[in-house]
Length: 170
Image 1: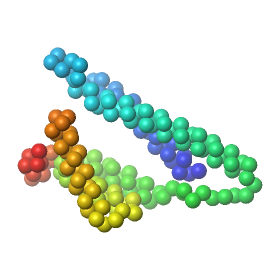
Image 2: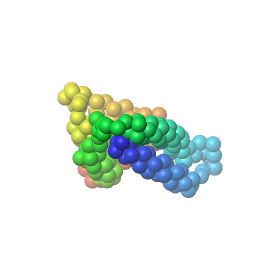
Image 3: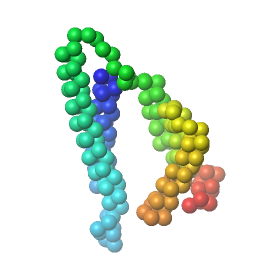
Image 4: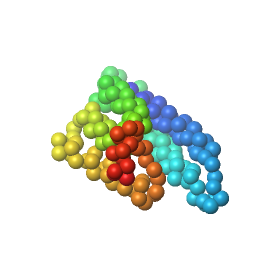
């Protein structure tokens, strides 16, 4: 039951964050040349998807929590679920996400994303070594190409030598 409650809290925070970011996107300046697809278009598309997924996850967790509470009430025996929350991993992943946020500004998108994914896969565990080595590289390259070439969005480049390295990459 602890896992469901943590999921409910996390999903609620994501949903509140989505509404806040929508308001931030509304404050983006509009340009007459790009009336239909302005600077807030892509962020709002992503925020709509995040909001829909958050609602789905929220209702799924509420339904599962109700079902679990109903089973626990009907059951006389105290049965402890196998899906307990691993607080250590959850706290490490939270700290890792905060560090990634700051690393984007300092070392740029490409390096920060690769290092973040390596560390996240190590914390989560279960991945084969070849997958841990190759997947972050391929995923980051594909993501950078999509953002820079197809969506024509700039990515964080970092500071100092990392900025120069990013200029070589994209």
